[in-house]
Length: 180
Image (cartoon, rainbow, N blue to C red; front, side, top):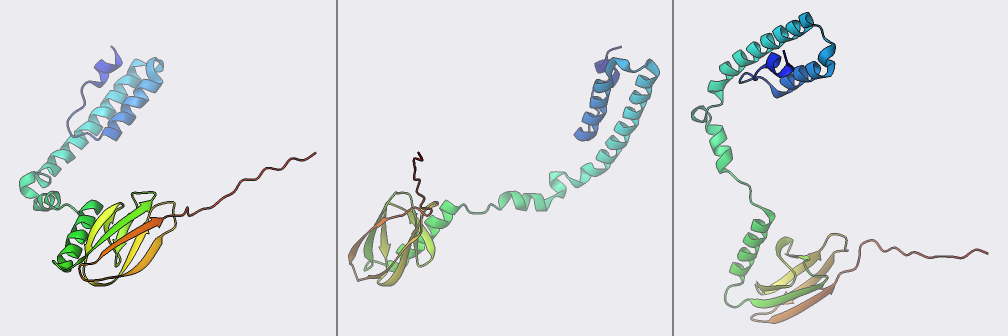
Protein backbone atom coordinates (compact mmCIF):
# COMPACT_ATOMS: atom_id res chain seq x y z
CA UNK A 1 0.00 0.00 0.00
CA UNK A 2 1.40 3.41 -0.93
CA UNK A 3 1.66 6.34 1.51
CA UNK A 4 -0.95 8.42 -0.33
CA UNK A 5 -3.46 5.56 -0.03
CA UNK A 6 -2.71 5.18 3.66
CA UNK A 7 -3.23 8.85 4.47
CA UNK A 8 -6.24 9.37 2.22
CA UNK A 9 -7.85 12.79 1.65
CA UNK A 10 -7.67 15.32 4.46
CA UNK A 11 -10.96 15.65 6.34
CA UNK A 12 -12.53 19.10 6.31
CA UNK A 13 -11.66 21.23 9.32
CA UNK A 14 -8.31 19.65 10.24
CA UNK A 15 -5.62 22.16 10.98
CA UNK A 16 -3.09 22.47 8.17
CA UNK A 17 -0.19 22.49 10.60
CA UNK A 18 -1.30 19.26 12.27
CA UNK A 19 -1.83 17.58 8.92
CA UNK A 20 1.55 18.72 7.63
CA UNK A 21 3.33 17.46 10.73
CA UNK A 22 1.68 14.05 10.61
CA UNK A 23 2.20 13.61 6.88
CA UNK A 24 5.77 14.93 7.17
CA UNK A 25 6.55 12.30 9.80
CA UNK A 26 5.16 9.60 7.53
CA UNK A 27 7.25 10.78 4.61
CA UNK A 28 10.48 11.18 6.63
CA UNK A 29 10.38 7.73 8.13
CA UNK A 30 9.08 6.29 4.87
CA UNK A 31 9.64 2.67 4.02
CA UNK A 32 11.61 1.96 7.21
CA UNK A 33 8.41 1.59 9.18
CA UNK A 34 6.88 -1.77 9.57
CA UNK A 35 3.27 -2.42 8.64
CA UNK A 36 2.02 -2.34 12.29
CA UNK A 37 3.70 1.06 12.78
CA UNK A 38 1.93 2.39 9.70
CA UNK A 39 -1.37 1.13 11.02
CA UNK A 40 -0.73 2.83 14.37
CA UNK A 41 0.12 6.13 12.61
CA UNK A 42 -3.04 5.89 10.52
CA UNK A 43 -5.12 5.31 13.65
CA UNK A 44 -3.50 8.32 15.40
CA UNK A 45 -4.14 10.42 12.33
CA UNK A 46 -7.79 9.36 12.25
CA UNK A 47 -8.26 10.22 15.93
CA UNK A 48 -6.66 13.64 15.49
CA UNK A 49 -8.71 14.30 12.37
CA UNK A 50 -11.98 13.35 14.03
CA UNK A 51 -11.29 15.65 16.99
CA UNK A 52 -10.43 18.55 14.68
CA UNK A 53 -13.54 17.95 12.58
CA UNK A 54 -15.73 17.87 15.68
CA UNK A 55 -14.20 21.13 16.93
CA UNK A 56 -14.56 22.78 13.54
CA UNK A 57 -18.21 21.78 13.23
CA UNK A 58 -18.92 23.33 16.64
CA UNK A 59 -17.17 26.57 15.63
CA UNK A 60 -18.85 26.98 12.25
CA UNK A 61 -21.98 28.80 13.50
CA UNK A 62 -19.76 31.45 15.08
CA UNK A 63 -18.08 32.46 11.83
CA UNK A 64 -21.02 32.57 9.43
CA UNK A 65 -21.66 35.98 7.83
CA UNK A 66 -25.15 36.19 9.36
CA UNK A 67 -23.78 35.85 12.89
CA UNK A 68 -20.91 38.29 12.38
CA UNK A 69 -22.02 41.93 12.20
CA UNK A 70 -18.56 42.95 13.44
CA UNK A 71 -16.95 41.37 10.38
CA UNK A 72 -19.32 43.34 8.13
CA UNK A 73 -18.52 46.62 9.89
CA UNK A 74 -14.79 45.99 9.68
CA UNK A 75 -15.05 45.19 5.97
CA UNK A 76 -16.96 48.41 5.29
CA UNK A 77 -14.58 50.58 7.33
CA UNK A 78 -11.43 51.48 5.48
CA UNK A 79 -8.81 53.84 6.73
CA UNK A 80 -7.81 56.69 4.41
CA UNK A 81 -4.48 56.42 2.63
CA UNK A 82 -1.82 59.10 2.95
CA UNK A 83 -2.71 60.33 -0.55
CA UNK A 84 -6.33 60.79 0.59
CA UNK A 85 -5.17 62.78 3.63
CA UNK A 86 -2.95 65.02 1.46
CA UNK A 87 -5.82 65.66 -0.96
CA UNK A 88 -8.22 66.43 1.89
CA UNK A 89 -5.73 68.85 3.51
CA UNK A 90 -5.18 70.61 0.19
CA UNK A 91 -8.91 71.02 -0.40
CA UNK A 92 -9.36 72.47 3.11
CA UNK A 93 -6.48 74.93 2.55
CA UNK A 94 -7.83 76.10 -0.80
CA UNK A 95 -11.35 76.44 0.64
CA UNK A 96 -9.96 78.73 3.39
CA UNK A 97 -8.23 80.93 0.82
CA UNK A 98 -11.45 81.76 -1.02
CA UNK A 99 -11.41 83.91 -4.15
CA UNK A 100 -8.97 86.46 -2.69
CA UNK A 101 -6.25 83.96 -1.75
CA UNK A 102 -2.73 84.10 -3.13
CA UNK A 103 -0.98 81.69 -5.44
CA UNK A 104 2.13 79.80 -4.40
CA UNK A 105 4.35 77.80 -6.72
CA UNK A 106 6.72 75.37 -4.94
CA UNK A 107 9.62 73.69 -6.76
CA UNK A 108 12.44 71.60 -5.38
CA UNK A 109 15.62 69.93 -6.48
CA UNK A 110 15.14 66.97 -6.38
CA UNK A 111 11.44 66.92 -7.11
CA UNK A 112 8.77 64.80 -5.38
CA UNK A 113 9.40 66.34 -1.96
CA UNK A 114 6.40 66.42 0.38
CA UNK A 115 5.04 69.97 0.82
CA UNK A 116 3.49 70.81 4.20
CA UNK A 117 1.79 74.13 4.88
CA UNK A 118 1.31 75.05 8.54
CA UNK A 119 2.17 71.47 9.53
CA UNK A 120 -0.31 69.70 7.23
CA UNK A 121 0.91 67.78 4.15
CA UNK A 122 -0.80 69.23 1.06
CA UNK A 123 1.17 68.23 -2.07
CA UNK A 124 4.37 66.97 -3.67
CA UNK A 125 6.72 69.19 -5.65
CA UNK A 126 6.30 70.72 -8.13
CA UNK A 127 3.06 72.16 -6.76
CA UNK A 128 0.74 75.09 -7.44
CA UNK A 129 -1.20 76.00 -4.31
CA UNK A 130 -3.76 78.60 -3.33
CA UNK A 131 -3.21 79.98 0.18
CA UNK A 132 -5.26 82.29 2.38
CA UNK A 133 -3.87 85.73 3.15
CA UNK A 134 -1.48 85.82 6.12
CA UNK A 135 1.59 84.13 7.57
CA UNK A 136 2.33 80.51 6.75
CA UNK A 137 5.13 78.00 7.31
CA UNK A 138 6.06 75.95 4.25
CA UNK A 139 8.17 72.85 4.82
CA UNK A 140 9.60 70.41 2.29
CA UNK A 141 10.69 66.90 3.29
CA UNK A 142 12.18 64.05 1.31
CA UNK A 143 13.72 60.87 2.74
CA UNK A 144 17.51 61.07 2.74
CA UNK A 145 17.50 64.88 2.60
CA UNK A 146 17.47 67.55 5.27
CA UNK A 147 14.12 69.30 5.76
CA UNK A 148 13.71 72.73 4.16
CA UNK A 149 11.54 75.30 5.96
CA UNK A 150 10.45 78.84 5.07
CA UNK A 151 8.08 81.30 6.74
CA UNK A 152 6.11 83.33 4.22
CA UNK A 153 3.58 86.14 4.30
CA UNK A 154 0.98 85.66 1.58
CA UNK A 155 -0.65 88.86 0.42
CA UNK A 156 -4.17 89.19 -0.89
CA UNK A 157 -4.29 87.89 -4.49
CA UNK A 158 -0.47 87.76 -4.44
CA UNK A 159 1.79 85.40 -6.34
CA UNK A 160 4.87 83.78 -4.86
CA UNK A 161 7.49 81.31 -6.09
CA UNK A 162 9.58 79.13 -3.77
CA UNK A 163 12.52 77.13 -5.10
CA UNK A 164 14.22 74.82 -2.65
CA UNK A 165 17.45 72.96 -3.20
CA UNK A 166 17.39 70.11 -0.74
CA UNK A 167 20.72 69.01 0.71
CA UNK A 168 21.56 65.42 1.46
CA UNK A 169 21.08 64.53 5.07
CA UNK A 170 24.28 62.50 5.35
CA UNK A 171 27.27 64.19 3.84
CA UNK A 172 30.18 61.84 3.46
CA UNK A 173 33.53 62.15 1.80
CA UNK A 174 35.97 59.55 0.63
CA UNK A 175 39.66 60.34 0.44
CA UNK A 176 42.48 58.19 -0.79
CA UNK A 177 46.07 58.34 0.31
CA UNK A 178 49.04 56.63 -1.21
CA UNK A 179 51.65 55.30 1.15
CA UNK A 180 55.19 54.65 -0.10
